[in-house]
Amino acid sequence: MKVKPISEINAVAEKVAEDTGVEFIEAVFRTGSSPSLTVFVDTEDGVDLDTLEKFHRAFDVAIDELDPTYGAAYTLNVSSPGLDRPLKTPRDFERALGQEVEVKLFAPVKGVKFFEGVLSGYDDNTVTLETEKEAALKFEKSKIAKINLAIKFD
Image (cartoon, rainbow, N blue to C red; front, side):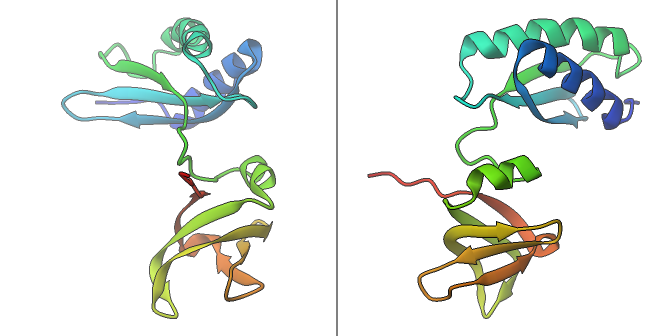
């Protein structure tokens, strides 16, 4: 299936997000036997079904004009990023500063691939955690498989 560049889809999603008062997180297009386009959106207070439906209706019209699959059928999904949402954008990292995060690495550091600690800093290339054992543990972003807020159940 031929699909237009994701950058074109992102541009449409960003415009619709701005118009509907939500934050565009990312768009993911999956090909195969059941092609689908999933767009993730959020707000400061999280999203509810009404917010998702409002964005979906507006985005559906806009994405049809773009015709990302050159007329081929696909399923459009709009979703929240969920509780275990990965930190990706500078805004994500800014909001997470001072909070507990989980870091999963592609390869072990000191024999360990999973770390949990408080996000104390970040820049374009690194993430810094404060853990119970170390005051400043730095990881290169390129070595991180996933970083997200730690989910605690009491």
